[in-house]
Length: 314
Length: 291
Ligand SMILES: Nc1ncnc2c1ncn2[C@@H]1O[C@H](COP(=O)(O)OP(=O)(O)OP(=O)(O)O)[C@@H](O)[C@H]1O
Ligand SMILES: [Mg+2]
Image 1 (cartoon, helix red, strand yellow):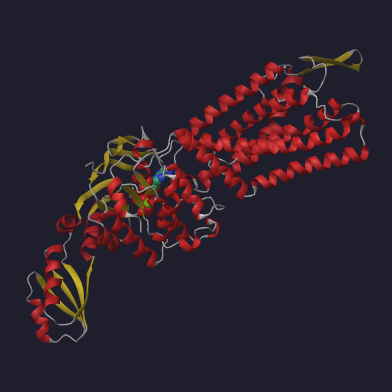
Image 2: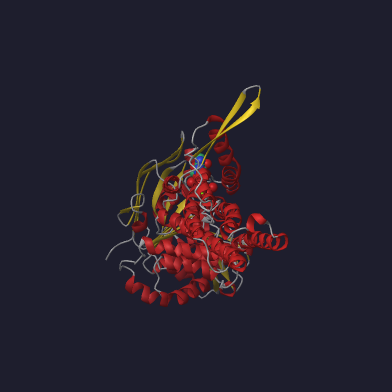
């Protein structure tokens, strides 16, 4: 089985004397979502633009499934789609027409075009606007159409540059669901984002970049274990008030560091051991029959990792 | 939801992206759709029709001898004077910001990041501009011929078809130029203004200066070549070099030289402009970065 592979080899981009991207080496493969994190101006968009041949590297290579994007763009992108920043669509075209253009360019057979367009538009909740001109759409609506366009032709690799930018909270949640469903289906997604909870929610791996240099890359857990100095934490909500005895019962669960009451029915739990112990704690809490109704892990560790790493380079 | 089950089956099959030529025509199709939708085509059509209607009205009312003395002078007066103007307007309307607009409005990002060669995008758009302009010219000529048939009957002089053929080559050259400037600039306004200035003023001015004052044949100016479109109606075809000696009195004379491109010369110049500007424009577009 062919794997999906995105590979940057010594990728460098200079603007005059300014180096926007400096010898980036990155090899992403498999079916997963890789988060691309870094402050403004770090070089995220630059990287993704090179992978779609919108700009050319000063040196180094961008390879998709073993094909060099610069020398054979059409082949390299044949199974890859991308959403870079927020492209505009011809204002006098309808959503259907804009997506037909993409479908035709990608070679979606005529018989499947209509159904596929309707499916991807339904996925971004724009079905009611299918035959409306894009011109008067709000930024978020355009972004939804752009996201829909990346799904046309079912590409195995999807590059997303801040896909949820401009979207309302529901739109963001919907896009996260789309990304999650994609990665379950053998897709490789490389997604830049400033929203750490978004990355913690949907991404399996993270790559951190600053000043055009890669700072860290690896599975989310590994990276946070390595660079975070705080514990994992989660908020547990109960249908009944939590008394002292239950509180101390909770704090005796393995790997729990502290339990702090937020209000009568909510506690903040700090723990170690990452996802594995989170799973164990949740199961144990549920098994205790103390009225657990909610459990929400917070992304403080990723945030802490981010702040530690980014601070280090300043 | 996308049909994930079937997707899993064919996920590792080679995704069949259409050939570059097919993609080129897909771009042409949607570009034409865009012209019709965005009313660009309509506006230019109306301009063409207004010129047609004005000429129809003026000739019908005043019956000018210069138009009605023969069918040749009729077509010469009608087509010879306005067709190059319509060609230039078409190139400005359809080609002037064709590429620069893609950068300025960020619409280029929507297509350029897909699996398609840039040359397919460029050429596809070029052909769409050409087809749209050609339609305008044909509609303009249809009304011209309707008038001509009214005054002179169905026999249309062959010079009109020659002029049409020359016009098509001229259109290709002007569009090539407009596209070149359009890929050179990032602002639609700049690329349009440069095209307008060059074709409506600068070229004719340089042509005049070079030929009349300096006395060199302006073979490198495209508007010079386009002279064959109106000269074809003159029988016999105007001489290549016309020297006029004006006596200023006191024994002093002023010699001015006017050049007329021969037909083969005109065709070669136009073809040269077309080929060189198209290749240059394509080259620039290939190198451009989407920032
Ligand atoms: N055309 C250009 N000319 C000069 N410098 C540029 C150009 N494009 C980008 N840069 C610089 O390259 C650097 C990286 O920019 P890039 O857009 O990749 O950042 P980013 O990580 O996407 O940031 P953000 O989070 O703000 O989107 C920035 O410092 C930017 O100023
Ligand atoms: Mg960016």
